[in-house]
Image 1 (cartoon, rainbow, N blue to C red):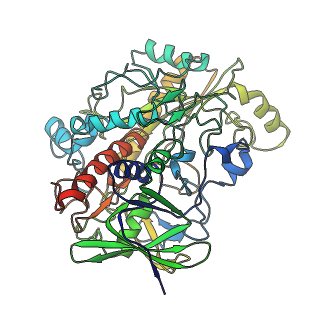
Image 2: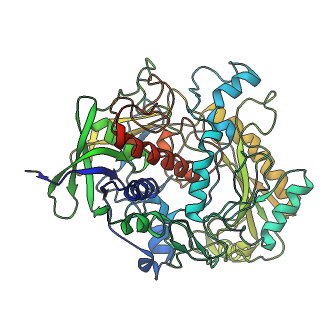
Length: 570
């Protein structure tokens, strides 16, 4: 028998960046908010002994327990989908802070082109630049409309950077803190790309260059360049994450209550409204119902989509007919790049998650695509994240991968190897989508989410083009041996690539092509909001977090407005 809790104004499902932002803004506005987080509580104090590569980077202590819930995967509909039993291609965070705890901190704003990609592409190149099976669409919002919310997110996290990129959208304010250190390694990239006529700039970093107090009074420390960011929490409180910014802000209002170990299994609905959620205490097994005036889905991309599917809210996308929007436009990224082996040793051990330099000369529509067989592009970066010894054993391609020679060359090349890589945009395709698996279930009896995804010709063509550009840069940097990455064929979910999953709950201005409107309010349930990178109609050439944060702040504004008057916000 489920225990019914007292009704609240707002319940947020997942307390990472999006859930923390929604909770803080709504609680500051006087709304009573409850956050349901299926993982445990944690804080900076929990990361004192965090420099354990095996525990966190290999065994994934901060990640989702796949024995309770995972996904199934297949490359196409002719294959049988099988469960992902170990973390691989992407890393799903769990616990207070979510993926915002173990992220690297690279914080780029998506380009103006991203938000109006169909309109701009059709206008410049015609409607047949890509075949009809690519489902590109505008987002229902422009960069200019979203810019104030980008700025608000920048100030919340104290973003460190410099406004030197001629290709990104206009900023209304300067970065809150200066860029990180220009190290000798970054200078190699800066000099090489400048000599090639490109426009390098320091990566916008949520690892802060100096101590900072944000507008809500939260203090964030200065980065120590220890090299333990991605897959780790920050013991210095110097990597902006939800548990050092928005969650404490929400807590201080006394209008926010956090419930941990609470796994939501159903969104409850009546008519055109939702009434609350049903969740399981993962430690006791007890079942609860949390009534709420508004329900906000703020967990990871995959779980937001799954909760809508198992709750039968919205129409599931059908690749045969093209009807339905839920699960449509799933996207990822490609990772073209080149490795260079140098004569002289360098300090590769020290670093930070977002210590790097980028060029956008081949990102978005920064260059003419008339004579290439793809659209969009990739940011190209050299990052100095700190090279850890277990995962990093670089050797040239003619060296065996085991034995005495491997050991000798690995030790020699450890401080003499650099990589230049691209984050390539991902265009939606009619055969790439999310759905429910007909065979496999999770620990709570619910169907697993099924991912059907493969690289496309667009991906392969873009990958080759950007790989060639990274090889040119590496050669200009003076590497003695330049090793470009090989071409891509089918997507493989086993090796790590990036935790930049997008789509499935897309935003837009038409219920026929999107799940939510541009306030992220569900078209079929006016008091349900779905917030995260699932709202992206395609994936761009950057890390998604800044764009997710901006969308969350805009959604929070809409939620507060809805709490006063109800109805559709558009």
